[in-house]
Image (cartoon, rainbow, N blue to C red; front, side, top):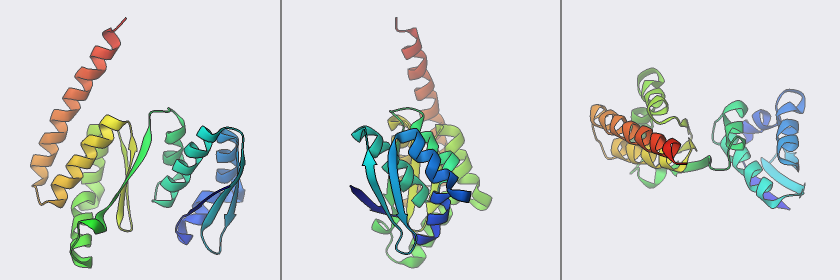
Length: 181
């Protein structure tokens, strides 16, 4: 049995209307999930494949970190896609500093987050004290560095220029993979 906890306000999202999100996750991963809506505790009580348990845990954690189920289910599309979570409270001196960091990452009207997603092909959620990223390892690494640049006070323009450069490098790498026999 595997236990994890998600915020109480995200339990309804994990379960879904009429239990359909939980049911879809169980069907797609072959695990059986029990949810305690009082405590936010999620138990994976039975499974056939241990690798599927890890995939289910990642989807549950992604939903717990603010992703919609549709976006979280992207973790099931490819074994190389993963979830990374950055705890911003490790870098903030106080609550006001944390809010400033989150504001810089989100941007006016969510525009900075959108630009990050467009330039890297990742999915990003800012929730509570964390930033969660879904993507391939190279993409996550680029977003993580860009977020740390913003946290350290770099101008948005410099961060966007860095991501543009990384985007070109990732496309070049992708093209070289396609050329291999």
